Image 1 (cartoon, rainbow over the protein chains, first blue to last red):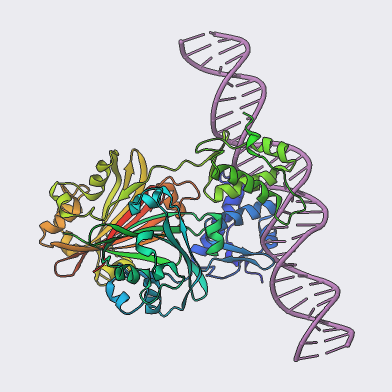
Image 2: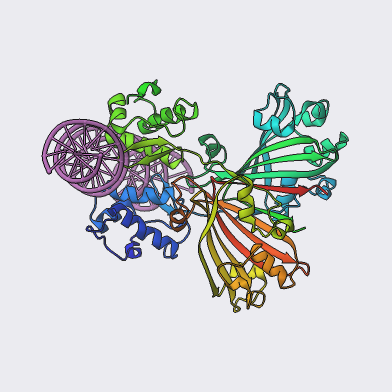
Length: 263
Length: 263
DNA sequence: AGCTACTACATGTATAGAGGAGTAGAGCAG
DNA sequence: CTGCTCTACTCCTCTATACATGTAGTAGCT
């Protein structure tokens, strides 16, 4: 496949811009201008070496730069391809509205079926742990008190997109289905309300960063995909925190939407 | 400076894990365990070559991996250092409350002074443009209608942290201080309300990705820092969109906080 | 004191070469 | 048709070398 027509210019060796950067510039330009479309194959190392008359490491550096920028992905033995962007899913700010729980649905599943995506949950584990300071501060529990921790992974159309761990004070969770892998219809928020803690509001703190290696592995992230970290605290009518949920979301799979009153 | 004591293990050449990855693993472990603290210098290339008895390109690949992960930054001529994380600023969800405008403050400045940071705005430019489809869809204007575009960059303690462009329909902006670089006390939201468009609510759509080269340059981002893209639409009492603000925020400088009712 | 030059050391760029390992298709044996 | 091998092509790992460029401290001159 000789699609070198993509590369229009030659290299200026007298320029103070490094040769490998100039090559990266041209490839980047081809991608951004649409001459190379999503999923399309970039010229191979051999073709680039031939075309530019440079050493192998030089073209590899150029390609490495594009990979770091998240524009391209390499597949061993096949080639380097323009990165495909998965469709993003919009998470509306009413995703915790009570009517969804009344329908017997947990938030993630309700959201997903609204856009026709098939969702699953796996890697569910429930345990009793001593929370980190960050969590116990939010829950308002003493740092010596243990809490119930529920971890799980969400998949959309078979692809992992989100890791979540909920922390619930033991005095709320003990003796309920919150301690079981499947908490029943409406999810754990429905169970918390069953316990007499009517939910009043949530606070979500959103930050972004690159994933740790562990996160990248569990979410199957290609280099160049950041993640959202979303920490949600749920408060009951008395203003007490009844749950903290620590979530890592694949950055290219979500769009978070919030509505704010201007009051 | 011989701080090789950080590296406890040797390399297993029979392992199927590449040598440069094993070296990266050890350095990463040193960083994550705290044996190497923020800002501290990693062993130099020469020291690593000596310690592991490998070629220069091999240690460079190891270091490159850490740089890609955002754990380390290289300074030409000085060394490679554990990345410093700037303090993050919390953006509360009431940042557009009317009382702030009453005080004569625009949102960004009000937020910043709350945490004692010195803020500035620069690179202000105002023009009339044909909006992209994404913007005109949100504004509900025809794609042929022009809108007023206001771009600016925000700095905190002298460091650029945010790029923002506001789009306002011309029939609201024309003949007002919205067309001027300095829109007066309370910012453009105060001017929009002066025009009889009482603000009722905002919708913020938040996504994350790696910065473009342009953004990285303007925000002075080191490789491995993602950005937030926040598109805010402001609606008046009649439910009409009166402004759309497209914002790129340095991902390591902000924490977005939102409050949601459980209704 | 203030300046320059030099030196040591750091990372950056580029070349050349040798295997290794995954992919995919062609062709052949059964 | 199925399953296998062979081959060509792809990216991956690692070595070795050379020179460029930025930083920082020192020695020495003015």
